[in-house]
Image 1: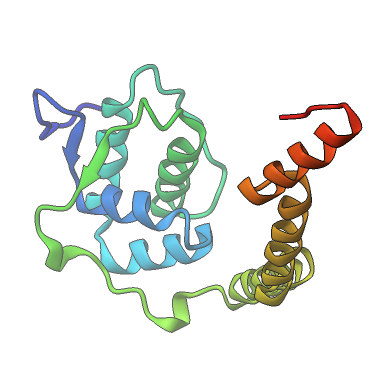
Image 2: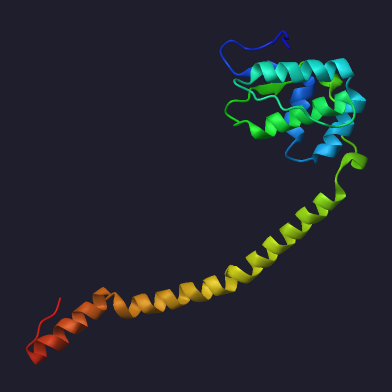
Length: 175
């Protein structure tokens, strides 16, 4: 499988709308939604070329044969699997030249259960913050306590003078 790679000579950037879409959406969408969007938005030939381009762009890529119905679906699975399994430093940055070719992501493509899990995680983190961190009132009280402690520990000029006279009368002299 050879393809024409449109690649920057001095940087690791490759032009491919499909691969740019998949690479940016992998972290925020589930594989099933990415597959559905790409299969409906891009032609079978575009997906095949993108897969070939990806395998040509990544050094020493291991081709895995997928046993799934539909060649286009297998190609999409191969693209996602390779992008997830290869070290990110070895993967080029894929960019889109024609932004109008990128499919829109609508609410029906969003995994609602994942959103609910994220909301629950955020709620737990906020609860943890409320329990573990000091309030403004606690900080003010702590500052005042610290000032009181400093007054007793760190002698002021007046305290030093009174200590000199008191101690000199007793025969001791402290600075």
